[in-house]
Length: 484
Image 1 (tube, helix red, strand yellow):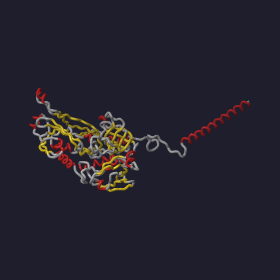
Image 2 (cartoon, one colour; image 1 turned 90 degrees about the vertical axis):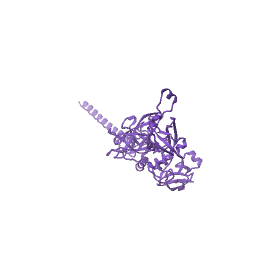
Image 3 (cartoon, helix red, strand yellow; image 1 turned 60 degrees about the horizontal axis):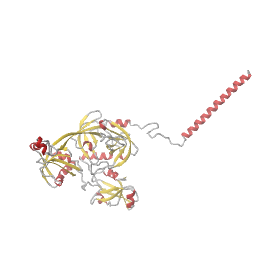
Image 4 (cartoon, one colour; image 1 turned 180 degrees about the horizontal axis):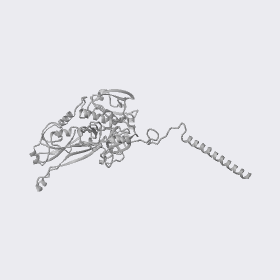
């Protein structure tokens, strides 16, 4: 009996010792693991997709909810004209033939409500040439919009609907956005209402995107948020739901999204909108220089010690830069203390000012930096601000012609439905391209012309190439193109 009890006691004691030893060994091992993974001087690591407090993923829901109600669907219609060539053989065998083919062109895009009383920003190319602009809100209410003004150089347009208490987006600061920052693109691609996509800012200051205008102002925000046809004019917002850009273009070989899209920075948009509201047209300022970017090869050729800034390779006589003392060979490094490293960045900064504004320009000359005060001027070399009506009258006067409406009998004889006749030609664009008195203008840039006011409206915000089509009294069709 004593042997049995002794054996049981020894076994129990051994088991107790084993359990105790195992406990302390595991505890030591656990402490050792903690020391390896979380040493006292190590930072707190989080996954890249985390934002804010630990364990909180980046939340797009609030920004999306705020944005979708302020982004609208824009639908446009315009009556277009194709002038058909005169075919005497067809008329000989088949009788009188139509000289015009009219059709209705429809388009769609997006817009962003920027005020509670109905001001909406969109792209110029969304509404250009439209006879009717229809706005559909996210709650399906529909309105006909009025065009306040547009600017082809920045591809920005402003329209307005008659409504109050509308949800709108607050402006952000496009200067403060950073590459790699999360953004949302909101619009109506392929007529899919209120579509939200996410991405990051891929680059800033992109240019050579707008090829339809001879004086573009480009410094686009590039993003990889998915943007497709129909997104034009929609919102690019940060994670706070603040508007930082207007989606405008995509880089594509097939017309659909292939990885990158481009938005007009909101700081440019704000200035354009303010000008359109106050004047009906943009007050564009110029320094009066021809400039180019600096790369390593060019810097070596010109013996430039730094690659930052923009090289001045020409000065407009009597322009702002000339009067301020800027010289050919100078390197512009700052505008109003804001560093500029490319032509697009300089254009972006200057686009925020009006003729007559005084700014400081920092230049480097022979290795020394200096600041020059400079008064900006308009393209015609003045500091005067102009209204849209003056721009329209100037454009029409540039044509060098007097117009009158055509009698219905004459239109019927020519088998055309509309047109405005040139009754007198003076020195101007039309005489230069060879148009003769008596020519009946039926369309400008394929836009139907019915009254003299239609000519004014067609040329009011126009820059670049213009196409005028129509007929002479003998039925001969002709077309002429020239630059404004």
